[in-house]
Image 1: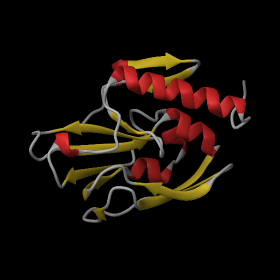
Image 2: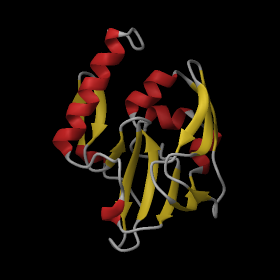
Image 3: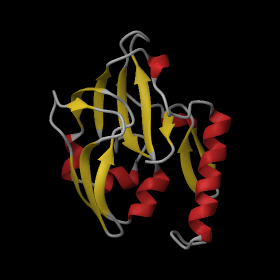
Length: 159
């Protein structure tokens, strides 16, 4: 499975991939592939989520076969500004883990939409049943820009 990073746009200095779904509260993205009736999801953290966490020091990711529940933690990150859970945006079973990102968390910072993906999972339901995820590119861009402006206003990230 590959992610098409050619769909990257810049939003006020931050890259954003418009070819995937986003969970707006957790800054996790989902790239779907395979048949719509039994899709596979590649999951990662968007550039703004990575930026607001600070320099990533460690990623703890689940092993293949682990059951994911949407809205519950599947792993943990340790970073300069944040230590806490990685929350799953979908339900399913982990089929692959990005060992390269686990060994080098900086990969998720350098290439969050490409080689910095975290896990892959076979979803429990059809692609159209994924709730709470933004899918429309216009909505995604608007959400990202609004979150970026809010973080700058609050001093979470630099102007």
